[in-house]
Image: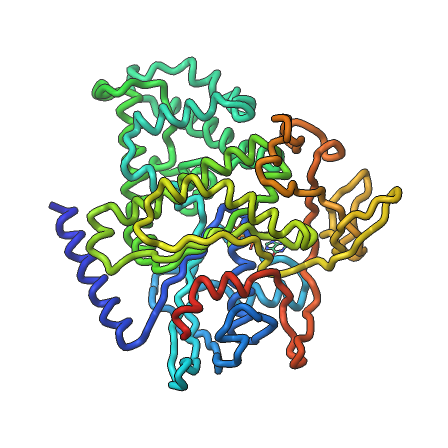
Length: 485
Ligand SMILES: Nc1nc2c(ncn2[C@@H]2O[C@H](COP(=O)(O)OP(=O)(O)OP(=O)(O)O)[C@@H](O)[C@H]2O)c(=O)[nH]1
Ligand SMILES: [Mg+2]
């Protein structure tokens, strides 16, 4: 019954939002990606572009001068933190530091005044919602039982290299009898060891992506609550004995879904019109082939969410939901431009099967390799008679290469490694995979990407100071160029 009223309420809200958008065209753009994927930098660069302009040849409305102005406006949702654009720009542009990690949902509204192609003055309201990709990867839990989730998490944790990180948790799990009486201390210990396993998997050397439940890694105000004090158990599909540890874990798993996952779906995900998913493909390549395969699984799960969003009864009550999805490999400026298409091809290879399978009911999907903020320049360096396509940048203070610790001021030429022309060769022409940090030292790894400091603003042809980027214009054209016709 509750579900029924909930649906009526949602339909009412959808209708109200729809009527509003008739008078004032509005798009809700979701920006997501796993932690450190580049969400904050992307949104900051996007707003900088719309309010300050820049070099955006492929973003037609801006390139042809039809955008008169972009202005920040009060956001529609009172309960969601505002995206701190001013703070992030201050860090990025004035201090040349990357913005701090954000870790929670935030929102910003920008109103774009433009001239339509047939000369009318128009405005488009863009609501940008920044939310952690980890929350998105929780959506599949909506229709998964505790038992199914347990079995799946355990199976994954026995695969290398995860099994190494899971050793402590596995040996504790072996001492637990799911049918024994519920025991708070056992639940606390299992949840702590399971969380430590998830944290270890996310570490730079493992670089794993698929690590639900998302709030175990970013608990916020739920830290220490029963809704986060559960873990998988070796259980069957049957009913748990009343009063058992199993029953207690199952109840808490269900609470997690009620308290965390369903509200996110209802209040945020179900209201998006367009979505960009930022993917740090380079971090996975840095870690190794296992991390790239894991990313593959995570991307399939992400794409499945968009299908879930459509297939549910809720989805059908709304106006047509997300109709454009852009998958973007971020930080392409770590690579020489000769590799940008190759990076794009790798992301395409990773997502193509899932896109085909996901039956996105007509939603447009595109793949791009971009740098929202380009922090490097290009150069060709000769080494032992060989010409290497390099990038020049200022490594952030503390980055280490070959024993040298960078001070955050010195510029260097970096050769990150060559991406293969055929993405399939990433895993080796003869099936021999490349080496990453998971199994070798930084010196032996085939690819190594250093964090570099943000750039100084460049001057456009018109003399406007602007943030340099790579293919951000293509992303913006795809995401909302059609609404600025
Ligand atoms: N070179 C380069 N580095 C980038 C770019 N975008 C992001 N980065 C790097 O990636 C890091 C994370 O970027 P954020 O935008 O903070 O990522 P996020 O997804 O918001 O991260 P959380 O808030 O922690 O979830 C930054 O500190 C930069 O080091 C880019 O366009 N170019
Ligand atoms: Mg962020």
